[in-house]
Image (cartoon, rainbow, N blue to C red; front, side, top):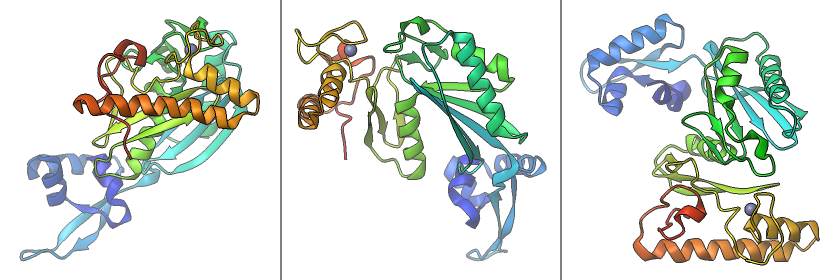
Length: 296
Ligand SMILES: [Zn+2]
């Protein structure tokens, strides 16, 4: 309901349209919208002519009735943003971060950044994005590439305890893909490729974020391309990430692009076999299955 109001924007949406889009009864919609108005989250936005009958009252979201904080914990940088109910960023701050520091220091830094960006405004929750692998359901980190000491750390609960806010945790690639998907409603399919100090992808299928059974969908950075290749921070050898970043470090951008091109060919090659979509789990675990998520 809140998302339909968000998408409707300033123009607003009538209760009848809300009932049609959600499949709820008009009575249920009326009950919910009465509560949203009482809590100040929604307001009347005028009337719209209807075919026959009386004009319909339209409702809109009150964007500054509440906020959410987003944190991106990257390997060397911490970004905090405050967004209103409509998803518009209203404040942001960036500070250096050492993801290799002891967990309690990183959690304290993250909580302080959230508090600073919030500036006393009412906040409903905290969304945390960081490099994987991790388990988004349990809010627990796995062997974050280059920082294996995080394995098993319950970051979601640690931050919730520290800030007193509900917290969700996801991979940064998933958070980025979801952010793009929310901007264009209508069930699109695409892959968001992150090419930074790590490589990964976020997958959106039919407008929904696809995480896979172990939050591992889109993890292509540690697919082995060269068995005797250079060692990788994950403990393997010749991974896409190791080969690509080594080429970038040498200034050989053309070779980095060639490495990525090999990944793309693998994706396309697999996607044609059965046409089913990326099965989830890590690339290595699921390489014998099929991949069809690379679109657009
Ligand atoms: Zn690797």
